[in-house]
Length: 170
Length: 170
Length: 170
View 1 (cartoon, chains in turn brown, green, blue):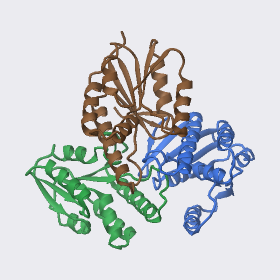
View 2 (view 1 turned 60 degrees about the vertical axis):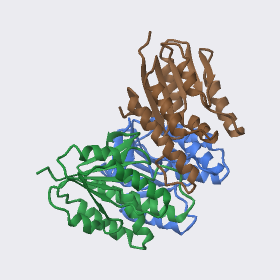
View 3 (view 1 turned 120 degrees about the vertical axis):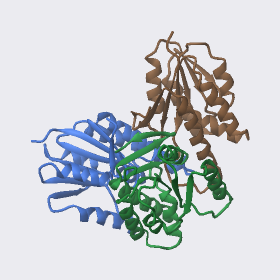
View 4 (view 1 turned 90 degrees about the vertical axis):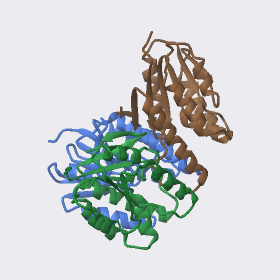
């Protein structure tokens, strides 16, 4: 059974996070579990989801968890290679649903601190631009940074993706 | 007396810059000097200042220097461990006050090039997003990048913070 | 004749990309070719172009290629040290001109995958801020990230610039 460890892949938009994570997971014995957090609100998002889905073949079992991510992780079998993509979309869904994001983030980080297989988790870094004008965007940026810090603290390996290439942070 | 050297911690919003810098400083013999550059314009900012202040105990001596930072640094005793948090808020205060930011930045960088104790300086990286629509934000972004370059050039150690973890740049 | 290899310098606004690239190129035997992709639409841009131009001396041969970059690269003599600054301005020009940016990006990446001298290519990382409100900015951000990934995949060396300092990614 593959080792239980958490790998955290962090990066900007179009930094190659998902593709690199898929490569790492698919080097392990199939089947692989894919937890998708994306929720389609519009055509742009539907298109992105379709592109990601098309890249994955029949060895992937896809679970959708736009909100119930902690429960979905809890229900996973031991030893299953997992790709969870991505934390920031989940956080955005939680915020739109009006949930307490700090509490939900703490619960999620707690489950991720006890990986039960080779778990690969993708998230966006969104804090390296100018302070956003809009208060909701600032709240999101802060919550995402705090969530990323919590997860990174528990991860065995942290990769910062730059133009498709991983930089090892931890 | 602890060695005089400049450590520069750079990172995005919620990247754990301040907490990491506090950890590094508080590993040195107390008391520690904290120079705060934040100025409270609104409730959101007041709350942030209060959270930061609450994290620090009685071993910290806090000095406020929203504008007169160069003078405050000049007046510090030799050998005192210092945490200066942060350059970008100071720069924003200078810009709002209508001062010549290039001249003020050059003066500040000059003082920082001659640290008189173990000095830890925190700043925000704000240049890795899309070009801002608004001309003031672009001016700020440019000025912040130039100031960060000046300080990084003089620093003995430069850390780029990602999700609470330091990457050594220099 | 200097070795044919591609060095890719990526970074945020005011991260010292151009200055560092100029330093690396000017350590090689002159003359040096400079391909500028900037197009002056307003005073702010004209001023930036003038500052960059003033920094370079008579050993630099400057070619302007706001759109015809692939053709300009194809016409370069073998062995010539080259600084191309920068890909994101070229991409923005292509987008404004209504060209097919994916097709143009693929053509460009193809030429860059076969450098015929010591080629240094500068580009902006724009994907590490909050998701832009505006759809055009999101399209640009995605196209820039994809282009950067293509070029980074072919590069022999990839440097991520932070406050004027290079971090080696590859």
